[in-house]
Amino acid sequence: MCSLAQRTEPEVYSPLGKAYFARPDSTGVIAKADRALLDGGEKADLLLAAARARDQFLRFADSIPLYTRGLQAFPDDVRFPRFRGHRLISIRRFDAALVDLKTASELAPASFDVSYHLGLAYYLRGDYNHAAREYTRCLALGDKPKPEFLRGMPEGWRSCYALDDDSRVALTDWTYRALRRAGKHQEAKQLLDRITDSMAVKENISYFKALLFYKGVRTEEQALGSPQNANAISTIGYGVAVFHRLEGRTERACDLLQRIVNEENWSAFGLIGAETDISRGLCAPVKK
Image (cartoon, rainbow, N blue to C red; front, side):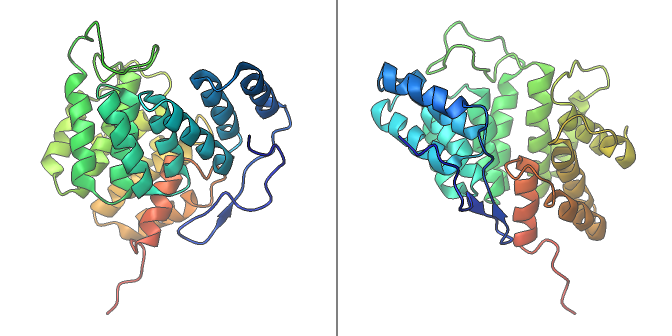
């Protein structure tokens, strides 16, 4: 079992050289999950619970080995490569994440969450064509009724079939960015035809606002104003920054990217995208 003591070393260094740390567990969540695992034995659900308890406090250096134990003990359980892949993205190990999420996709090809994170791993590696292809595959199933049986899908997981509006806007936002960065601007524009003010979006408001901004029915001020949660600036801001960059407004894009990388939630995907773009020279001065 991993130590319960608070780690003093960083969980990860960002591509920009910034050290990121875990949060303390002052509520005993991790200890409770560990006791259940010790008492209940090496069961998949208990291993998963102990790992995810650590994830709540950004203790990925401790959660990833638990996911690894689960993957070794239960190789056909999609939850372990799916969640380990997610947390490998969190610590900026995109290549390793891609391996896990491909495995997860083979186990549960209709999983929305697997497709979402697999496309993200491709995107963050700079492989926009494969990211767009994966996202588009899932979106294409969204209008079809959900089959009675889906291979490898745990109970309660979202599928790519019969997408609700919350799932659709999350997937569409990343698909739009990937298509545009792959140079497929017309395909990206066509995605926005499905995005309307009347959509029943309850949770993924940030993605929804970004899409309405791309479509031209929200201003930047309207999109970025009144964030709903701690991740909103990273999510909306990153989408707006990518849009500005693709429209040739590099200075405005980089202003936003720099703001995003100074946000506190270092595991937010928008922040990871922003620092990755900056580290790859997107905001480097043009040599004359």
